[in-house]
Length: 175
Image (tube, rainbow, N blue to C red; front, side, top):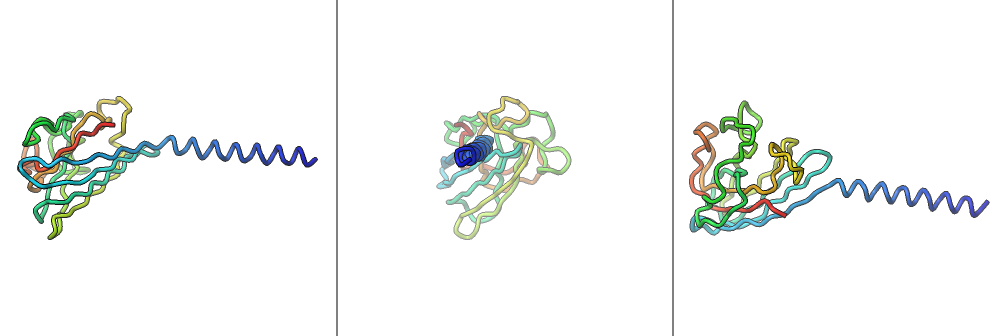
């Protein structure tokens, strides 16, 4: 009887352990570093975590001028140009007009604006089911794209990119 109880306890422990391991493997995480562009001193990181069909994005930046700045996903993971222009235009796989995230038409890369404090530090966060990490779906997959921080704010109206000014930081969204 003790042997059967022991076997059942071991089996339950194995099943619980397998369930825990499988749920953690459903999560994907990507942390990327920003490079300063356009003679700025901007630095920081961005984190993308995909879990249960949603991606949570958080960017933490330093070295910005105090005030409002735009951040967008651009079409290429190329940050080689001194002004960040090698990242191309906004990522727009659904061919929509530029706009404000979640309101009317907008690009999948139109993340929006955030505020840098008096010390030049800023943070922005977003959770969406409109992106994923590495699925290969050209309308949702953020891998192979670029992340750009702009000198100014996005007006959400000017086409095709919101008139946000110079590109002061760039990061390639790659593994």
